[in-house]
Length: 139
Picture 1 (tube, rainbow, N blue to C red):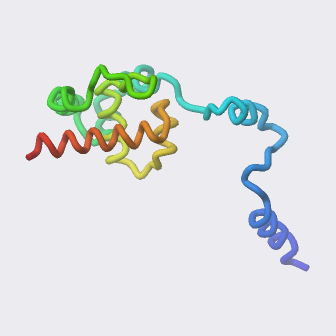
Picture 2 (picture 1 turned 180 degrees about the horizontal axis):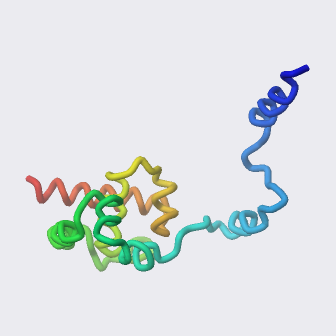
């Protein structure tokens, strides 16, 4: 008799669908219908640019002046004016911040892409582009 609540919880966890909607998920349903996922808008401009030196270093594992130096070295390798399938390339600063966040934290691409307001494939391409540019400069 004592195990019934535990069994109920386990049963709910095992057999409930992750796609089931709850009563308070109207905004989540709206996002699903429109195909848009909730994201943090203007994270770089509104949050990262206002980080103190200490906060910047804690999050990106670089001093801000080191970041600027690396950005100047990579800028020509990772930025382009070409339009790829209807979207212009993300600016070099944001690409480098995305890659550094990926390198510096255990976050998933899903989490990183929500934070930087980009799609998952775009996030993967940013990290690959920065990594390849770093390798080119190192060799």
